[in-house]
Image 1: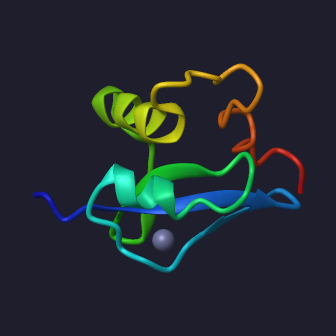
Image 2 (image 1 turned 45 degrees about the vertical axis):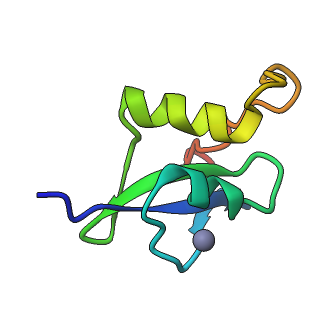
Image 3 (image 1 turned 60 degrees about the vertical axis):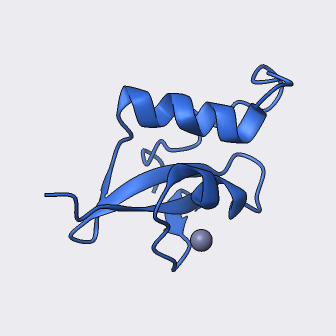
Amino acid sequence: MRKRHFVAVYTDSGCILGCNHKHKNITTAAACISQPGGYVVAVRRRKYLPLTEVEEAEFQKAMFGRAARASDSAPVGGLNPQES
Ligand SMILES: [Zn+2]
């Protein structure tokens, strides 16, 4: 059941683009983010899945770690596929 991996994603003109790796954990996926506003999602059978609460916490830790500066570069909010 654990056939999931993680990818770094970012939005470009409303599209969600992910890296082409299969990261085994959140930390390496987070390290792969090169764009401000990048995010990490789980992938299973080529579908993006939201992170679980535990994974989300891991992501936050990997991204912001000690200097919890989530306020000025919050990664959420950029994943809204509303605009075409
Ligand atoms: Zn990657």
